Structure formats: C-alpha cells, structure tokens
Image 1 (cartoon, one colour):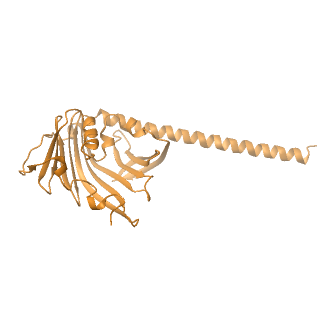
Image 2 (spheres, helix red, strand yellow; image 1 turned 180 degrees about the vertical axis):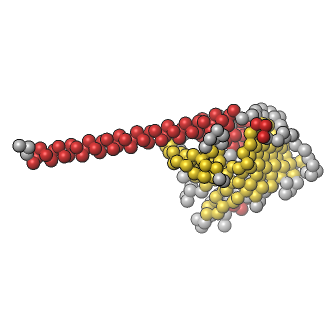
Image 3 (tube, one colour; image 1 turned 120 degrees about the vertical axis):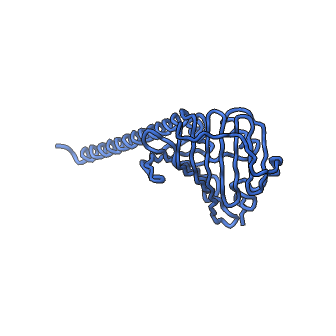
Length: 266
C-alpha cells in the first residue's frame, strides 16, 4: 500500500518534471525563433549586398522630447538612388529642410535648396566610406544609412543582446516578417518583405537611454533594383545657380533644426 507521503512526493516530483519540461520547451522555441529571425535578417543582408543598383522612396519620422516632456514628431520624405560601389544620390524634404546629396565616387555635394547654397567635399572611395565621412566629419548622416552598407547583417547585429521573431506584419500592402532586437543603447525593429525580394519595408530605432524613448523610423516604398532602376547621373549639376559655401555655412539641412534640439525644444 502506498503511503500518503509517497503519493505527495510523486505528485511533487511530477510537477517539477512538468515545470522543467515546460521551461525546456519554452527555451527551445525561443532559440528557434531567434535562429529564424537571424536567418531572415541575414537573407535580407545578402539580398541587398547582391544588388548593384537600388532605388527607393522613403518617409521618415523623428521624435523629439521637449523640456516639459512633450513628445513631438518631425516628418520628412525623400528618395535614394544607389549604384554600388561608389555612387549615390539622396533627397530629403521636410518642414525645415529641402536637401539633395550627390556623390560620384570622388566628390560629395550637399545642396540646400531653400537657401540655394551648396557645399562640396572631396571624399574619394566607396559608399561605406562616404557614410562614415558624412556622419563623423560633416555631421550629416544619410537616412537609413545602416541599410545601405555592404554587410548589413554584421552592422545591425553589433551589440545585439536579444532577438525576437514577432511574426507577420503588413507595410504599404506588402506582407513582411517582423523582427525585434535589443542592444544596451537602443531597441530596433525591422519589417522585411516576404518572398524573393526580402527588402526592408520599415526600420524603427527607439532610444532606451533617453526619457520617454523617442524613436526614429523609416518607411520604404517604390523599391526597385537592377534594370528597373533608371540610369542616373550622380554628378552635381548646378541648374539653379546655387552659391558655393563652406560646410558650416549651409543652413537648415538637418532633420532636427536648432530650436528643436533634443530635450531643449520649447
């Protein structure tokens, strides 16, 4: 005859076993989801790297937080034409700026259309080198620059501590795989078109170290590659007789104007 104590011990051990099994299965599913998410991101990276000519339109939103903790959204739109390895033209039009950047492999030109002023800097090299020059030397980062680099996967996965596959989402009528990632400084999400052309449809970066977690997001549309991309002249043509100035004298070309400085807008 089995004692009451023995029955209780068996029941308890059975409960522990079920709990352990549930934890194991949950962990297995999580790792499978992480592997799937990484695979989807790598497929997008490989697809982008294989494209010699890319063209797309974009809409971007930049959130700022004021001194009195009001969150404001600055919106802009533009277009990017890219010819690997060393040619790109990008435009951005918003409430405070109308800017065109062109790079022919040797010289980068920034044109402020509102002021009809332009500046030029010698920057021979690849698009990857140009992105670094614009960000680090000129303080003029390209929109969605991470997605334009030759090895998107390595750049995006740097410092990532958490990966999630959130299933499907629809951006602009395109069904996408929705992935989420965390780093010590930011959370970011990406929606990747399903099918043979796994291009990025939306990219969102959330600052976790700034109060209220302001975001920067880019939504991509009218995606074209290869022969669908209209041949472009990436050199600067001064059709408006703009005046040449130094980089510091080119006003109103940033997403964030001076009176909207992060945390200081009134």
